[in-house]
Image (cartoon, rainbow, N blue to C red; front, side, top):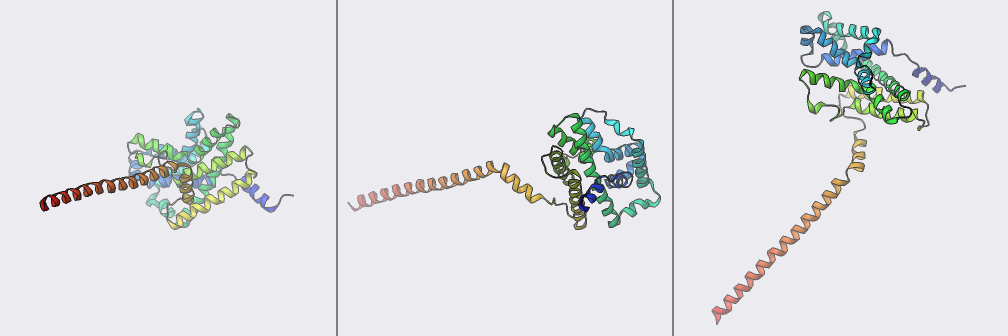
Amino acid sequence: MDSPWDELTLAFSRTSMFPFFDIAHYLVSVMALKRQPGAAAVAWKNPLSSWFTAMLHCFGGGILSCVLLAEPPLRFLANNTNILLASSIWYIIFFCPRDLVSQGYSFLPVQLLAAGMKEVTRTWKIVGGVTYANSYYKNGWIVMIAIGWARGAGGTVITNFEQLVKGGWKPEADEWLKMSYPAKVTLLGSVIFTFQHMKLLAVSRHNLMFLYTMFLVATKITMMITETATVPFAPFEDTLSRMLFGWQQQFSSCEKKSETKSSFNGTGSSTSKPIAVASDTVKKKHTKKSE
């Protein structure tokens, strides 16, 4: 007989994301789009462009994973139910009378609930991406990590491409150059679930899904309440970076210190020599005068 913990985690891993968790994901994604400067004006002037951008925010991870696996990028359009659901949320957010949806979303408890439910969907996307990639490339762990990361956080990469097409792309905000916290934590989760899928971790999938999801939800809610963008595991990143990639800097700093010491000693000896020579010449002149 399974323990209550196993029953809880197993029931959690079998939770369906449709419709409530998917609604939370679409709500957070479209609200992030609306908060961008000029997004509301674009929706009124060109609703088709705004709708397409909203679909990229909602289904960007699936699109990027299809591109990486050489599948049709527009395959997400085949799921009519999710497309209609995301489109309905886009419509009521941008065109609701008196902007009631945005005003309701402005309350912090609503934002916390929606953000927490969105993080739950992130876990399901990572696991689905890892499993789907394994069906294409058996035990191809690099591909599994890449597809799991693309499913969970590929929306930011796709939206960067969309901004590039519109002419509003900023290189300093590119996910490839400066990864955000969702991209980093999704990459970490993709690595963990890939190792678990290859049986390199002695933990069951449903237990790992529960623990990883609780970590995501707790971290996201804490960051929102404290209003900080600091990555929780930033100290570990700095320590690991110094251990793996900081050797060249340490050697160069030691070399610079040795060069400065040697140059200081060299200048001291060189300055002492002219002083000694000058003193000898003064002594000779004094002896000549005395004679």
